[in-house]
Length: 213
Ligand code: SF4
Image 1 (cartoon, rainbow, N blue to C red):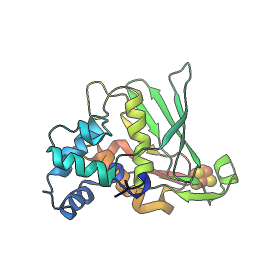
Image 2: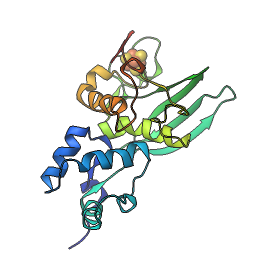
Image 3: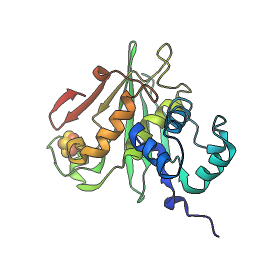
Image 4: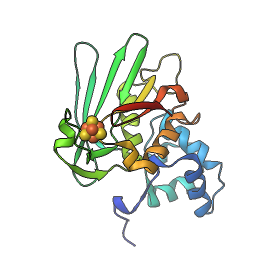
């Protein structure tokens, strides 16, 4: 039998704990596997199932066949002198999105995109001028946090040393128009087995105003 194409595989990167547990039950495994895999992905930055050594070998082999952990592709990453770090990332379909990290004292804020383009066309905004292209998937939203955290070489969860202390949904797009994927990604940002950010540090900003999760 030929191998499934990458895109046929289930991308586990954007799965909330509940959805990941349901996935494992659906393939005849115990739901607690979700906790193990969440930690590997979001706290250790591991995308290769064969490296998830507390999973039995047959399960690792099964996951290699049917699943993947696939973030967006980094097209560009650049640092400014003030410590700001910017990324251009390619998502499914070939469009690109922007993500920005802004350090400020003991705070490091990651500004995350929720859509490619935007339908709202606020007068001051270049993204609005390009029109709406597509909604990002949960994997493409949380994938920005995943890649940014990896670029600093530290899991976000490490409260002593973490670079990213806050996330704001203020990049490209209107998050409320891509509600469910945004909620799934924010669930992972605040999940103890993933990034463990407190509710006060994860902010959803709608056009013109911001509100904590
Ligand atoms: S909602 Fe945000 S991304 Fe969309 S046009 Fe307005 S400012 Fe730009």
